[in-house]
Image 1 (cartoon, rainbow, N blue to C red):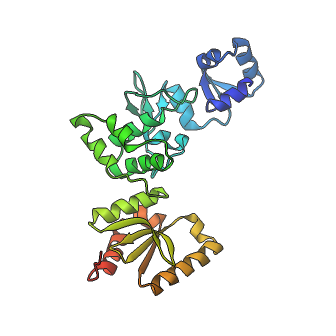
Image 2: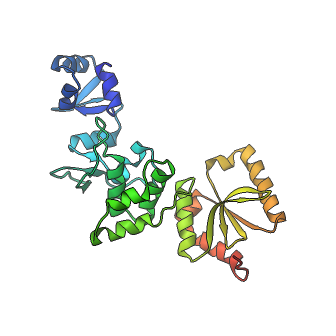
Image 3: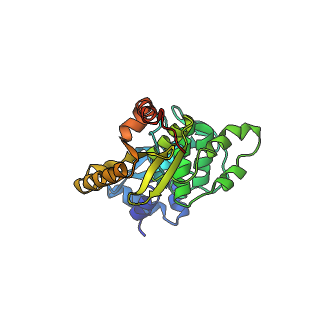
Length: 273
């Protein structure tokens, strides 16, 4: 592996100390810089030209991407990109970023990204409950953590709020917006079943109060083949006696009260469990 390949592996940006530790020489680093394949951002920091800004910022701040900022690098769902970078820093601080302290697992070395467990633990302490639950649910669905494992690392009264976030997670969602919708329905006191397999219809996202099907549509539901499939399912649902509502990302994330209002319009006067 040459230096540019290693840089790519490391997230396209690295401290020269990291490169030396990996076995590259000062001469190799100078030659790579002279060739134009990489640039020196400042003394002690080298990057490829297409290095992602968040990774660069983490290295320049001598920190690790953490919490919501680490989510895409761990392949986790994230409801919103944070307004400020979240960094795990052992000491010191950086202007304009959210600094987290404390670590229980090794980082994603050589990438400047905190470990998955640290990213989740800081998320449940730091983010709004729904946003944190989305990240944890994503990791749980992928089989990369368990609620028990995380809960054991959140002891004491000071972590009570973080443990309550874990109670919002059940590992049944197929997407971030399904987590949001599930929490929305349950916060309204609606009896909510998820991923229910109904005879002649198939698996539906939500079954509310035993008769109202709610489907959450992602981007694929706009494809002609999926539209046809959805139409057949809707018809089969109606014939079987179910009511059906469908919502997309914009509705769930930015207009939840519309969903609540319409769901209650259907449920009112016909609550059957």
